Image (cartoon, rainbow, N blue to C red; front, top):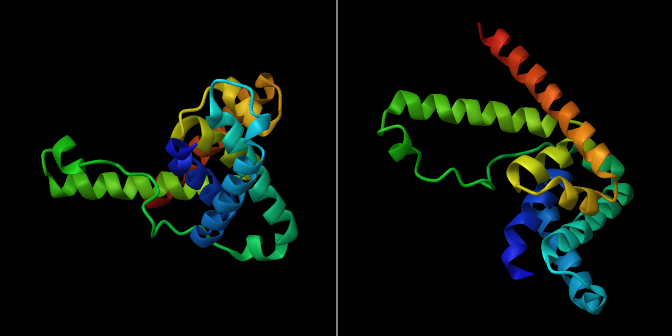
Length: 168
């Protein structure tokens, strides 16, 4: 389960929108997973573990609804390593700046999505989970995963187009 620690933290961070709370939720989930590991009967622990992380986050959100609505997403912790961007753009400062600004726009747009859509986008696009894995984690049918993902992508496109139009 340790190889999935980054994915667990990333999911928790996107769900609860707070780095410290995300760490707490992941710790709680890992404790629960270790306690109930004897119940795991599969080959891939990642969806099983992320489902526990998700449940931990949702339990916390239900108990702290007012607080969670006030918390803003901060990208001061680089939760998605972009690698060496200088190599990809030949060290061009203008290209690096444009990539950083675009990345911030996308992350802000993802953070602004309603929770069910944000969750499915994070699991598919950032964590590279299969539709079946997402369905297992979220405890919904694969068709619902596909429709939520489609809707989330449409909402992101809309938000990013409007952001771009606002810049012009």
